[in-house]
Amino acid sequence: MLDVVDIGDRSIDAYRGVAPDEQLDELVRVARQLRGARILHLNATSYGGGVSEILRACVPLLKDLGLRAEWKIIRGDDAFFQITKRLHNGLQGAPGELSESEKALYLGNAQLNAPHLAEDYDFVIVHDPQPAAIPGLVHRDGSRWVWRCHIDTSHPNPAIWDFLTPYLRVYDAAVFTLESFIPPRFPIRRIAILPPAIDPLSPKNLALPPKLARHILEWIGVRLDRPLVTQVSRFDKWKDPLGVVAAYRLVRQRIPNLQLALVSSMALDDPEAWDIYETVRAETAQDRLIHVFTNLVGVGNVEVNAFQSLSDVVIQKSLREGFGLVVSEALWKGTPVVAGRVGGIPMQMPPGTGGILVDSVEECADALLHLLRHPQVAHTLGQSGRERVRQHFLMPRLLLDELRLLETLATSQPHAPAGSGLEEHLMEEPSAVRE
Image (tube, rainbow, N blue to C red; front, side, top):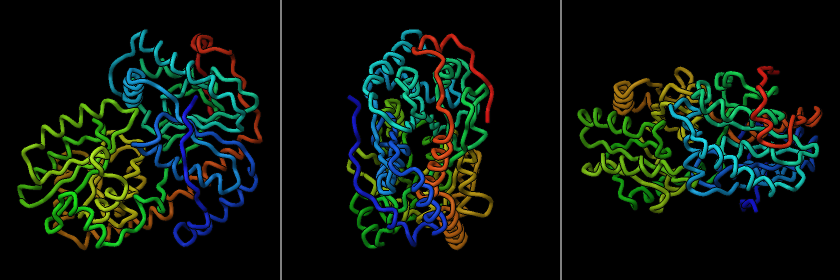
């Protein structure tokens, strides 16, 4: 069986006074048109990344709005997730190919999981490459299938992209964060551009009383009588944690008592993270002012909230980035951000809003030093960033965009797969037609 993720109850009314009223009113109206629709969100892990955080807020709110929503995760072993991590990296442009045995293992996992999708759904939203091959093996019965790609696939590795492309042909629609992320020769006709969003009422994003936030960080060994900069992200080469350390060391030459926190959540579907974690630990072991934390040592959402709330500056020095939810999380707390000029980050931080975009270790260090030495500038940037997040990157806006897409799909003919098996899809050339 697929694992059903337990979720709590949520009320959309709780967002009144937090998100813009016009978004909430329109969300309720659109949801009324879809009341009773059966929706499944399908992904690979229930914790440890932005997708799971979005779904933990999204699914219970869909239920509160009158839809029959569920969240399930596929099953896979470590070998499968090693392969899907390589797929993930390859879709973002990393070199390499999958062997024939690795391709067979990936497709075999789809064949193992597909029979457990026997229930009838009106809409199935499949997240990222791990479960992407499943719909070609499932009896559709009028359901609409959406592939939601959360990563930057603008310049994928051709070998990886050629392998994955045929399995996407059976989808009715695809969702990307940016139009520039749409890969070449994309086979799905209907494409929606929907940036992700954060949940302002999650434990990670609720306003913490300052005294409590200080107590939390001091409890785990962070000194708040010294300046603090923090990066919250998975241990992933695309997040460039070693580049963050290098930029921090440049700033330490001017601000000797500066602290750096690297805060991460280890996910089931990211085995590569352990290697990068060990590399970071080895690189920083002799520096008592660098703090490395993960969810495996008791650092969870509330601790992340405290770091993002009390840091002088938050860093997100990504080299590739789908969106970067942690940027909006920090800005929502009024904390300025120094971030890589990649992916969905610039849409969160247009010029003069939220913080400073950078393109190198040296630029990152210069931006950090500037904000640390000019706290009023930092405060103004943080406050402008908070308002931008309120208008554009809170959960009700994302739900509204997604339900508008489903409303459109509900009035269109479902996609008719050309064949019943994965092997048949492999033999067909993908179409370049888009709507």
